[in-house]
Image (cartoon, rainbow, N blue to C red; front, side, top):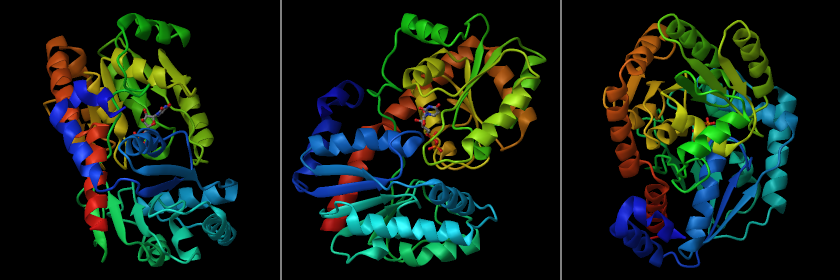
Length: 397
Ligand code: UDP
């Protein structure tokens, strides 16, 4: 299985992975999050877990099953960790803790290492005798969290042996335990990123009645206020004044994000006033792939972002990206080399950059080539696997 990555990263990188895994043979490692579908975390686990297994670790992945009050609580905590002044209701909090307690008591945890992803399963560490190495893998930029949410979660976080965040500066004051930096990554052989022929791309778009008669501008994102979908419409409106083009916004609903349907309704109302806008909410990974390939420009206008894997996905397909300089996006976009960075909500600048790219095919090609190479070197799943193997090796001595 690991051999499938040889054409992308070469022999040396594969041999390094095998060497790093040698001391971890048979290590039982459990990943825990709260959805199999939707969002970047589930996507990464779908690739990372089998790859760890393939290299001789015994890797498993289980879900902490929530219910509406649980997800309402965790979405509020997520938003609060990203800086919004919001806090869950008392009953939501007690559901959150109760479900974590049940999980800790009854989930099949019989591992050497437990990796807890994000705030949803975070408190589970406190509800069982701790015999394993516990790692909190936080995918959120928590450089300016709301104080109240941070104080609530801090006692749980302190029970972890180590934490992993996506980028330098994602933790405001640091933590007393060991913190490793592991930027996320994309899988070049997954349905979202595998090669697609131009014909296959065309057929996929035809299935959704998206014509290729005009340049496409695309944003692929959950319908989430932090991804600023209304801002995307505003930028499109500005661009349309000077260039004929279409906009496609693709966003499925993540199982652990209860805000999606409400935001989508607002976007649909606003989009109804504009021509040539296509909104799609199907879960179809080949459609993500096809759109990122067919787009003249991909947008990612997030106001806050964890990492924003959709940026690397588009760059990998040779498509330039105009995106806001938040979260992990500046790591992926080298401004003026493979895309353009703008300030969040600066719609005039975003429109100007989109127009510059729409009007210059050579610039798009040049950015596209740089983008693919930048992602190949820095943001492929093999690098993520290497970072995890090194971190585990160091933590376990
Ligand atoms: N995605 C998808 N279908 C959609 C929207 C998003 O498969 O309709 C995928 C997207 O391609 C990416 C992930 O979900 O792999 C989103 O990850 P990202 O880090 O960009 O954002 P998150 O949703 O985790 O905040």
